[in-house]
Image (cartoon, rainbow, N blue to C red; front, top):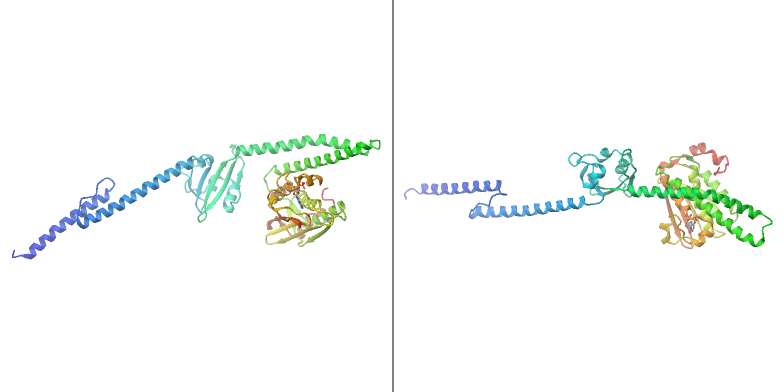
Length: 422
Ligand code: ADP
């Protein structure tokens, strides 16, 4: 009792030992908290233990939830009929589902973090991926030793990341080829008998001894056989255009010369029916296939003349700017209602079937124009106001343009005054 400092020191020592024991138990529990129950401590240590154990329980709960969500996601993507590959901004593989592994031959252990373009080694695919333009899908035809046709569709997200969807379209592609072959073969087979029928009808029409009451029906039969011939030759042209997906390189075309010739052809056919204005605002030419380009431009000019009432005005315009080269045909005809515009380039689509047939149209003209432009990386745009007229314009990329001197020097056909069909 006479030594209070000893008493205080003793009490502090006991407290220190108790804290050290608690600290040790706490540390031991923290290290093995998944297996052991929290230590039974009171006071401040007790509060600490219960707070840490609450945090721990919450973390465990979220971890389990995330894990089950992830498993669910993996199970659902594995049962997807399409392949999915997640790519980071460097286009390296971050994740893929079972179907993608099957279609692209990816391996889970080795292919994560690898650049997908280097792994697939398909030039068109590398170009598609690096272009960053995923507005359309890419179809990759079968390669040697592999009969599958694959279709890729990029879906950009985040900062440069891409979800790549992969589909096996072998069956559709085979059906399309069968359809194209069938149309091409049927048209080809129909051409010869039709030529014979047309020939006989022509001879009959010229026969002076033909009874008068047969002249009308024979004339109508001739008109119909001419229409059939047009349809068949248009179908054959479409088949040729569809035969490959490859872009046409071609040769320099003197566009000014081509348009002058188109105007001459039109004037020769329906002289004085329409006024034709030619506006050549650029001397530059265009790289492309002369025959195809002539056919596409003529289809547009012919439509403008066919569907405009007499006395109308047709304007042909060629101009170039930073966006490339542009050709347009504007008419003051009946125009086309807005609901028809998106479907106009479909085969056999007609705004007014009766009227179009009267005009001798095959319903394939604009489909041919669209295909020709696609082959040249170009685009067809249609603007129209009902009752006021229409403008059909063809747009080509700047890379398709060639200087006037090159076009004129290479494309001597128009300057020499030769027929463009020859
Ligand atoms: P067609 O050979 O019947 O003319 P197209 O494919 O060239 O077939 O045109 C499709 C349809 O678009 C035509 O039937 C016609 O109804 C409409 N059309 C095309 N050009 C014009 C135009 N300049 N003015 C009004 N309608 C047009």
